[in-house]
Length: 118
Image (cartoon, rainbow, N blue to C red):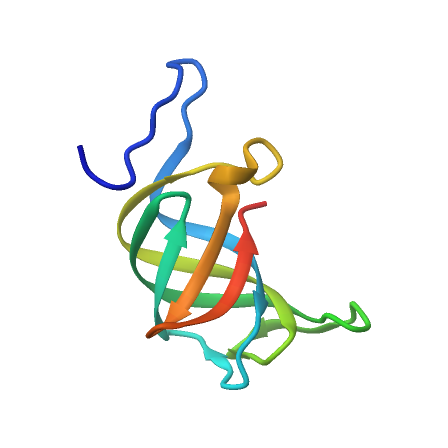
């Protein structure tokens, strides 16, 4: 067996793909740039990924939508980020199975964002 394998009932399969969209809370003073390479941890899986698009950038203090299509995400901002993954992963909606819908993004050894799959 290898890290990231998922056991489930045949009638309750998780989603699988090499791309996913997540609601991200950015926690780094250095902004996230569209196209930037990061490291994804979701459930028990880990792999490199690319932040393809940043949509609906929101000020977390006021909940004001700052930009519909952004090139960057700054410290304490929230956005819908589409991640392109180096290999397929299994995941699920945070609402359905929280443990399969939580994720962390890393830049080197630093955790720079937390998020959920809506």
